[in-house]
Structures are given as structure tokens and as C-alpha cells.
Amino acid sequence: MTDTELAGRIAAIRRFNRFYTRRIGALRRGLLGSPFPLPEARILYELSRRGSATATEIRRDLELDAGYLSRLLRGLRQRGLVRAAASSQDARASVLSLSDKGAKQFAQLDQRTREQVGDMLRRLPEPGRERVVHAMRAVESLLEDAKPGAAVLRGPRPGDMGRVIQLHGELYAREFGYDASFEALVAEIAAGFVRNFDPSGERCWIAEQDGEVVGSVFLVRQSKTVAKLRLLVLDPRARGQGLGRRLTQACIRFAREKGYKKMVLWTQSHLAAARAIYESEKFILKSKKKHFSFGKRLVAETWELTL
Image (cartoon, rainbow, N blue to C red; front, side, top):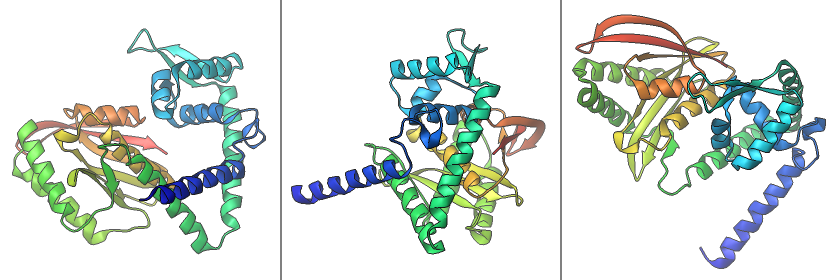
């Protein structure tokens, strides 16, 4: 790319940024006629989505300066919109949540946002709506994956299912002592997904890093209102990057977009890393059951997330 080409692309991106921030009203004192500037609105959104969170979690997800976030939270608490309670896990931390007043005011803002986006889409013919949504997803995915060395989340290609099956078989045998029947189960799930794939409500994400498949997750339809998360796996070499969380969050976003009311998943009690991700994303443990499978005595768990 020449310097002239780069300058032209920079100018195009800056032009789009100016257009879109004006279009959604991000430059106004209050977002959509509300008393909340955009940073406050995003904090309220995160607390509404999560139910509760620590300041550290919000700072990490929104990539805000700690001092700036502290001032924003102090203002929201002084107005009675956010409350804080001592954390049962860390005495140094507070767990934040919306007060009744905060939840009511955010619900009004959220409704206005939905109406604004709905109005914007209704002005377009159906092919145009799909193009806009597809383009926004592409921008999000490409920029998120542009971090140096970051794994790319993409759809499956020929050969990927074999690697997903192999990765499960190798990892669970080496780390947990599972026998070959587990690999057979994964193969059955993957084959069923390919045979019965419904693009209107199902999806598979493949995590690729440095040209290699290092993880996967599947979202399948269990009923009209319930989606099921399946086959979340990470190559040990790809751990420690937040990739398992990215895969899980991709499923949650897709399920919400498709109008599912609930997500469910089935896992084992000893899978601590996966359980930690599910818990942090506000899945609730609904049941446990002892069983003998894959050559091991295990405790199966069912988790649910209300969307």
C-alpha cells in the first residue's frame, strides 16, 4: 500500500466516524434526549446486561481509564442510579448493580435506542438492511481480530470439523483421562451440525491463530426460544488471551440477535476454566448429576442464561 492509498483510507474511515457519531446522536449532551452522555449510558448498559459487575470488569470491557471510570461511577451513585455492595469473594472490591431508579431510567433509554435503530433500518429495503448488518459485523470482527497475534474468529471451512474433533479427543485424553468414546461423541455432534445446519438460528465459530485452528464453539437450536452452546474448546497454546470468553460472547450476541430467550449448556464439574467463563457471563448453574462416561466418574452440570 502506498502512502497515498493509506491516506485515502484513513480519510474514508474518519469521514465514516464523523457521519455515524452524528447519525446516532453520540455528540449530543445527552444520548437520545436522556440525561446520560454516551460513557454513562454504556456503563448502565453493562450493568443491565450483566446484572452486577465490579469496576475492574467494567474497565476491562469498556477499556476506560481507571480514574475516569471512578468519576463516572461516583456520579451515577450520587444520583441514586447505581448501588454498590461488598464482594463476598474479595473484600477490597465492590459489586455494582443498577438501583431500581437506575433500571427504570435505563429501560427508557434502551427503548429509545431500539426505536432509533429500528427507524433507521425501516427506511431501507430488506436487502439494504442485511447489507448494513453484515457490514457492521465484518467491521467489528476485522478490527477485533487485528490485534497483533490475536486469534481470528471465522466460520467453518472444509477440514475444520476434523480438527475440532481431533482437538477435543487429544486434549481431554491428555488432561482429563477421557477415553475414545468422548471423541466419538464429539464426532457425532459435529456431523449432526453439518447435516442439519440451520443458518437462520445456528452458527459455528472457528478460532484460528497463525494459520492453525486453536478453538471452536457451536450454537444450535434446541427449540424456538432456547439455544444450546456446544463444543467450546481451546488448544492449550491459545489459553490466557481471553479467547474462550470471546467465543462464548460471540454465541451470546448471536443468540440475542436471533431472538432466543434462553441459552443452555452441558458441562462437567471439573472443567474449572470453562465454568469460570460461564459464571462470569451470568449463566446460572441449574442442576448436577453424577454419571459414568468416557471411562470416568463425572458430575454433569446444566447451566442456563436468560437473554
